[in-house]
Image (tube, rainbow, N blue to C red):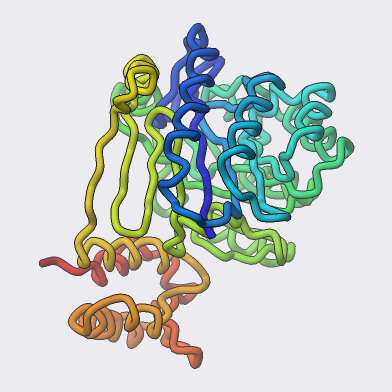
Length: 377
């Protein structure tokens, strides 16, 4: 099985925290969609004869596209790939774009999953983040999506926002739980260099939450969603049973995927490839038959480190037998020796199914544990 990721880099406005490649200039959107479809066609053999199990259209803000744009993309995919029946097909959306008419249009297309960038249900915090919707619009958009017929909806939340409190975070979780989305992704706000929010922090305009408050909000998140019936299947992701993101899970479980569009990444099991992060250069390269991209052939140690980095973040953890079948003994020995100290401390567990997993205690220091298991040549 394999997946397809499609990057739509256009946004009506740029959020203050965002470091992903995007542009607020939509003048070349038509040319971009044409180039994207050409890339899909010319790279159809990248993942060989694998059946496509997931399609994810992300950004940017893909919900700025119109019906004819989506129809062109899906028509190209259907002509060039074998799509598994019941494939998960996700669209990232901004609540402000989701009018009832727009949702009805989306529902008429192959989409069967929406990912809504809510981030918070607090209007003051949304303004601080530079979001273009307010809390009521997010709630209305969710309810309208449900009424339109979407039965698989994910929402994004962010914690440790500057100016947030225990009460505001609790209210965000209360609202999310009442809406009952099938999936919740909850991210710790990071201040990426070059973003507006980073500059505001540097100038003293805003003050990040301290580590203690950050940890407290993360703890509250885990406890509240667990009580509400959500399975904590990856450090930042929670799902009602059976609604884990199949596309994101493919990234964490060594599944090949084709990434099309400016700045999109691809993985074929042996190498990683990424397109130029520039709309003009991307279009020019596709038009001239000389795509602008870079490629990295992965060494065995890099593949091992990637597996540690991605798999240990998940509830499935590190399956020892899988590692034995894929890597030399020196990597297995290193992993087991490195994990032993954390197992003794109670931050990792080696379970009866021969998998090493983070414990609840270990989740809070997962970055440090992963660093310890990374192999250095």
